[in-house]
Length: 159
Image (cartoon, rainbow, N blue to C red; front, side, top):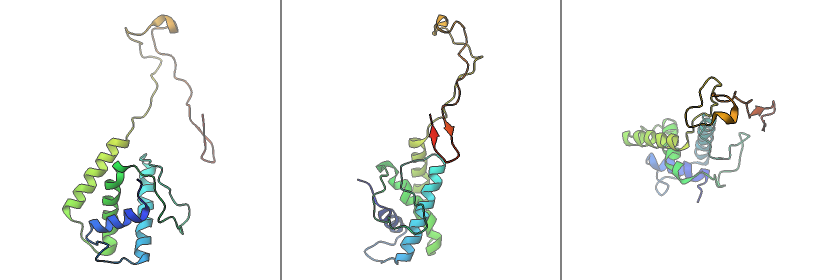
């Protein structure tokens, strides 16, 4: 089951000691924290950590309670790192255990989502003894093909 943006924000405040049963957070503080969540995940999206999180296109957005479709393995990394980002705005010192948990969960998230860059072999690299040279009529790999991804000016990708 996917969490909503509100659940991530509330869990981040819970990590900082602002439990929802004891404190009622003002709506403007929740909205500011949602903007920090959006910007954090937009930054992660730009770094290659892509979940399909619904990024907002405008500053005013009412998608606070819609599901985010984020996988379960990313929950802890998101709400602990969000807690680090919002702690300074509420004047709360970050506990050492929270900083460590945020760092470790982010590392685990990177290991889970990281993919090596695809590369083609150069045409000067020998095929090796296990490859059949009669297929290509050459003992070397074929010349690299053209790039498969061609980016248009409007942001679309053609294959």
